[in-house]
Image (cartoon, rainbow, N blue to C red):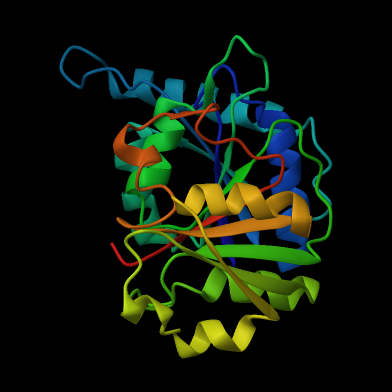
Length: 266
């Protein structure tokens, strides 16, 4: 992972500085470049001078730089970039130019007055983007990743290079990964087949029977004490129920550890 993108200002309830510091610490381990982006409202071309929009862009760039100045950059290459379009439209275009390997997003704060784990914009990004996403809990401090729990229903992976992000994490931190396969009512015989690349990076395996993949994960999180939870984004996968809407409620899912969402077999 050479290029990491971290958007600011997606929600008034997410903590950008803590997430930005985590991103820098994580990027340092991977020797990656960090793009810090935030959307600004460009005025309509008709009736506005180009110089005005240029000034707005410079103001937003200055705002981003002020946020970056609050953290320890640790020698990481950090690029501040204002985006003129809405984030859901801007990121795919940005990705074509810069080949983003990972987006780091923040979960909503733990205040009981905020019912969401992911807000609408953040949830939409996780749901719709083809780029792997790492979701960081509120005020989470970076620590080396020693143990990973990957939760799957099916061992079949149809997306090319879907495992590259987790492979890089395992190699960088010399981490071990436990594979949890949750067999639900819709489990098919072919789900027992495992992609060769997946089998090569798994240190241990366990299966369980649960009503949903999500319930299986909750049952085994405390048993395994992982530093990272890894899931696939699939129609029949972990978030199939949660992603019926763009928001994800805390009553449906919450996590005290980082959550890596990989591209699955949509």
